[in-house]
Length: 109
Length: 115
Image (cartoon, rainbow over the protein chains, first blue to last red):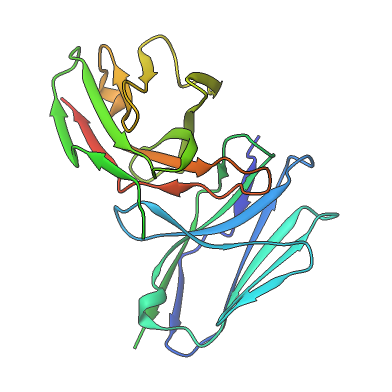
């Protein structure tokens, strides 16, 4: 049973496009939610935490629906530098992070 | 900005050999983790360490693996007898000791290749 599932990707979009990624998680006891970004052959880096009320950080907006066990990430006005793999990550307090396989985004000029 | 560091960046070893991967977590962090990522696959949890003992481990973390905090700064992962399937990127992560802080910060990883 996959614990965190993400859109298969890859997403290929032009600069300036808006793109949305979706993620579902199976463990209803999950308490913390994150989007990490991973560049090729690099470590995961925290993009943003996801809060129940939804939150925004510049061009990035994250939403959480606990009832549906669904998390989303919206990227507006895509830049070339946004090209990466976006990892949906969940955990229960004090436990290991559970990663999705990631969705690859490629932004072209 | 403080960061997690890892050495070596790359390690090539023969099957059956022992390897030790080293990590220096962020200095005021008290929770430490090892994860691995096989090429093309997702990041997988191996083990967590707090207060000088293992707090959680996955099925992957069998008797061939061990962790240690030999001094006040290093956190190591030892693989006693490497197998071909141990080839992966190994990431160390750390987290501060705060009830409301779940964010883990990752080091740059050690790429292990077992031949």
